[in-house]
Image 1 (cartoon, chains in turn red, yellow):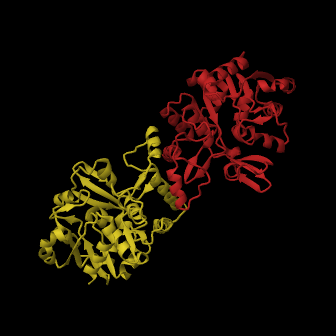
Image 2 (cartoon, helix red, strand yellow; image 1 turned 90 degrees about the horizontal axis):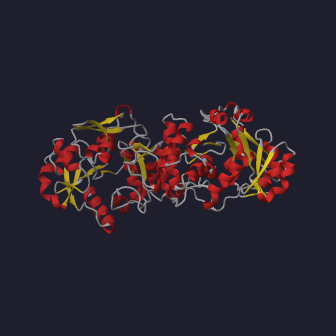
Image 3 (cartoon, rainbow over the protein chains, first blue to last red; image 1 turned 120 degrees about the vertical axis):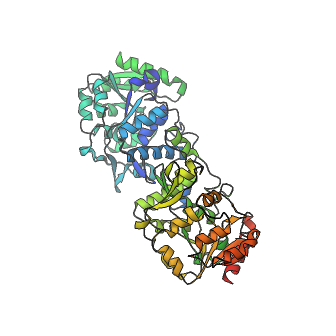
Length: 294
Length: 294
């Protein structure tokens, strides 16, 4: 996402984000996935952690803790400022799909950030200890419980947010970011109409594999793929997306997987995909677009 | 309040606070008067300003400002942590009169802090520019508009919070703090039943004058008394409270006003009332109690 925004014309990019990990915490609606995209594009992300705002303070949470509130979900003060602004706008009747672009514009973000849906859709993780709300599994229990399944509460009643289907249909290219397919991408595709729109969309449809050498850059994806019965490599990723994309982007380190990916009926494009060095991001994004569009 | 808590047995003290300056700001219910009492008794008050929490940070407000929110009412991060905790409890159905003692207990406050009412009662200031909500007049417009009158929106429907009438009736002494009579004390007495309970209460009933030498220690009281047609000294204060108290405490600097106070039918007690030096507060509180109870 970040690399594409750097490499192209950001006004022409729509970022569609997952709301399945949204959580009501300290009475605030927190949208961690949308906010990570927002903070990244605004240059505010705490790059070391991969979430939250940099140069953050934690005074509010410390006081709430003193007052007996649950504080297992870390909210920094700057982050809380954003949640308060969003909550105030939501309470005034603005839908999330209107609020996010407004917040983005205020932070100088030129990419349009949209939630997949304005409706409540909650990712629920099935574990040996029963069903857990996503953040309970991920943050509170440190994603230590093995994942037996994932479902999206409210998905059947959810409607795509205004602009989402239109963006998919009109796009020259739709890129699925190298995120967790089960808990970051699937809750987007679970909104009735989005998977169908993507399948039928006329543009290039590309997924970037989040696994390099069978490992995710961050997070529990490899373990999830194992327990859910997938190959823990980019071929497994290809199988997950084979019905909605035409191209899978693999990292150079996985070039030997190209034949297996092609056997799934996908085009395989090989690029650098790991973007540890911020100064190289724009170049990686440009190269990726050339590779998949060319 | 603080000095009494220091001088007596705090478990036996109930502090009844004004909710007329409460404001919904950034989507949070803020109760500045109750919170000033809470922070004072918890030893957390920013003594220099006379409000808010000491060692405060302002990260959330800065972010909200960046996002286009109104930020004329200063909320620090630690303060926001308290408002979030309170809002969460209120949303869960706890009345304010239950929430405040809980928050107090968490902060080690042994005095019971109660709002005059759990209902909405809003102080409205009448100015030459029309009616202004209290905080708009006080903070946003720096109390520069002359006050032509004050009314309490919602007062006629407000009920005393559980425990308030009981505390007044059972008290050996009721002390009206040296606060602004028009905007801090009147909104308490405006709750139907409270003024009557105070008038009929069997204990000592004492008001401490907030004016010394015709000036308030802080805030716009002297100017308000002038425009509302009162003498701007402790005799004017005595007139305001003559129907509900039996004793008025004057500062030593105002000893010459004793005969005029007594002419109102009040007993006049002369004490040090200015508590600039924190180390002398307990002694002042003890002396005050001796003077008015003896």
